[in-house]
Image (tube, rainbow, N blue to C red; front, side, top):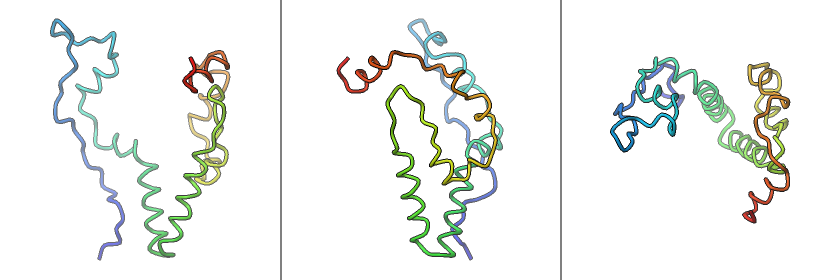
Length: 141
């Protein structure tokens, strides 16, 4: 009997080709594509690494499926609509959103992760003049 839950077992995902974008002389252009893209194209990734990258999505899918099996279709639809509305809350383009509503809906406000410690406002790499950023987002500049 299947409840439609996603698989818990890690499935390896390998690239079909290990080709790197080559430049004019047949050599990879690392200055344009970067060193991380070269590494991503050549390394075989451990199957658990991909599973860990998708951990939150997999648990969210599983929780929604369990909720659907217990309460019916309306409960996951209602939660999905609330999450979509929380993601659409906008700010001015030069201000970083705190996503307080989204984090409280997903339960991330109760966790402390590396993003909370190392991704604070004083370390933000986004710098720009507010007027120029808004004009660019509006297509004036």
